[in-house]
Each structure stands twice: as structure tokens, then as C-alpha cells.
Image (spheres, rainbow, N blue to C red):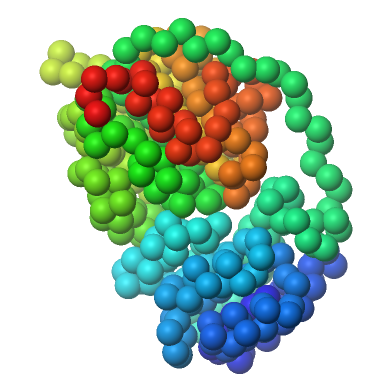
Length: 346
């Protein structure tokens, strides 16, 4: 379903989507209220949702859209403007699966089509789409029974969290279950457009109930504060005589992600050895696996989100299939396990 108040945008987006025979636009709506009414009878797997529309708007009605759609994924198509970014990050925290920067009038070009279809394919292949659309795709390969590593426990100096598609909603659930004080700094790499990062930091400060900063070169990493990777660089952890410090690296990574989880994990392995803890939440692809191998080789633990609670079980699946995970679970379960590792601070 395509939900946008612009007749032209709905028509253009529908044409783009149906250039891939695996997709069919089954409905469109000019308001969130109209979308909700149609969703009572229309069976759809993905809702492409604009947030700025007449009436209540997509953001206010998002919880009702998610409930009425009976399990559909929501892909927010939003402006990159500051106001649009604020609403988009809130939508992602409320349960939207992914976001797509909306081009200006007349700029719906070939690259946008490729990105749009790529995001739709990722959501459809994730296994989280239970309806007719999922059956048009080849089933994902069976999970390799790699098993879980033993968790040797022990104190940690830093908590590292990587996430992508569906990650902001997962982060909200993770921090809701995490004690307000754990005694170590928290580094987060979330795949988001660069323009969203300051907004993401503000939102994360609110729903995580602790200070959050967009990391800068040389930033001291202080206990019980969150540091997020900037949109144009990878967040790395360095050990100094004064304590842990943030470093920003802009090198291209094998996964092509910017920012990438891999440098964060790999640098923490060098800086902290066995005294780090990694968490890989929902997301497409395999970002975090290369760095995770270095983290595990140093004796640190990695926890991964389970398939049932993930919007896209790509990144955590890769961690599991490579034999790097000590534990699979929902974000809340993983947070409670982290809390046991840092007992006495909560």
C-alpha cells in the first residue's frame, strides 16, 4: 500500500514498485485515516508511508496502522529536512521498519527506484512478512546450526551495539530493559542517513534515559553515556592513558556501510581485549561479522537478536551462523543479560 497525500507521488511510486514483478500495489491512500480504513479489508505486506499529510498525519496514526495491518512492515518515505528527520526517527522508534529519504519534486530518478526496490526486497525476504508477498520469493537458506558459544562472563569496559533496519525500535526496547546505570560507556552504530544523526541522538537521550552524543574525534568515552557513530564516519574505540576515547574513521569497509559496525567491534577488540561486550540487533546484510570475529578472538562476548523479534534477521543471523553469538534473544532479554554482566551498577 502506498500512502501519500500527493496524487502524483502515489502514481510515480506505484509505477516504480511494479517495475519489479514480485510486487503489486494493492491499494493507495491520500491520508492515514483512509489507509487505516482500507487496511481493515485489504491484505498487504508493506506500507510505504509519508508522514506529512492532511488530517492526523502518518506519525500520529502509525500505531493504528501497524495494528490494523496485521503484521505489515512500514517503510517511511520522508524528507531529509530537520523537521522530517525528527518525525522519521520517532516513527522508527514506534515500530516502522525502515526509512527512505524522499526526493524533491521531479527528482524521482533511477537511483531512487533502485534504492526503493532494494529496501522493499529486504523487508519481503526478511521472513517477517507472513502474507502472500513472501511466497513470491525463494525461501531463505536454512539457518546453519552453528550453535552458541559459551559466555565466560567477567567484567566489561565498554558496551557496543550495532543495528540497521528496524534498529531504532529495537534500541528503544533494549534500553527500556537496561538499568539506568551500568558503569561503562555505550557505543552505538545505527545505519541512518547522516542528516538524521543529531535528531537520533536527541531521541535516544529521551528513550534511553541517559545522555547521548554524536561521537567526535577525541571524545572521552564516559560511563553511562551513549556515543553514536556519525553518518559520515565509523566510530572506533581507542585506549589512552586517560581512558577510552572515540576515534572517527572514514575508510571504506567491505560491507559498503557508512557508518559500519565492523570498525567499532574491531577497534574495541584491540583496545579492550576480552573486556568488551557486543550486541547485534536487527538489520539487513552482514555488517558486524568481520569485526565480531576479532572481538570474539580476543575473548569478548557478542549477543544477537533472535529471528522472531527482528524486522530483518540479516546482521544477527550472520553473527549466529559464523558461530560468534553467545546468546540469541529479544532486545529486552539481551539487555537483561548485559545487566547481569555489569551487576551492581543498576
